[in-house]
Image (cartoon, rainbow, N blue to C red; front, side, top):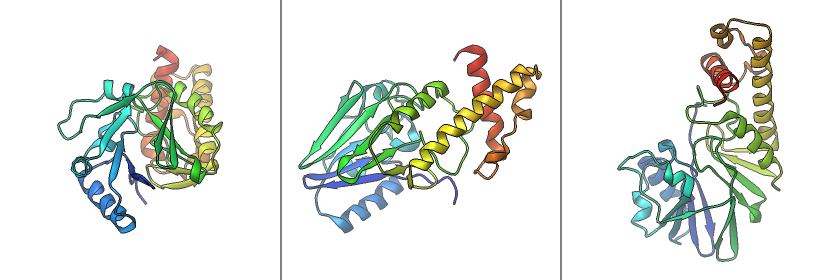
Length: 243
């Protein structure tokens, strides 16, 4: 299947909301899909967080007159890129509700986890939650978790678990899932911490730990052989340095 990336759009009676343009090609195909279902304009484009792989290609929506929006912490941490359209609006705090006609979209911010300003979206009308990058099904964590805070990430997964929803929508690999995917992500994190700590307690030479930790119960997941040792490295650095 590969590590595909997905955008999301929500049709309300007052217009369309797009979450993450991703790229020009994906935005163009998304717009084609929108037009197959409605003639209503795209009113908002919301960036889920600060990473380029979700934020490029928004020009087609800007031409529609869409307002771009993100959490203020995401905007503060936007890496410079001329292909990323700066937001017209930012929101702050831990929760914001975007009202679109008779529909609401609930936006949640839990703090530093994966990237900056990461927003989790809840759609009460559909009893669904959309998470971007926080829960990736059928795959181990991305490489060495470049600018993430793993401990906070795990804590925030438990916060997401408290939300009321049935369907879980995701942005990589497979777009539609359930609470089982959230539970597996939590379990993977917990096992990753446990096995790394066990290796440290056994006095395994520090620089050997990433290659000696094995988690065979997850070897069916994508990129297990390529990325597990990098996952361990990130947890090891967090435990040993505090960051």
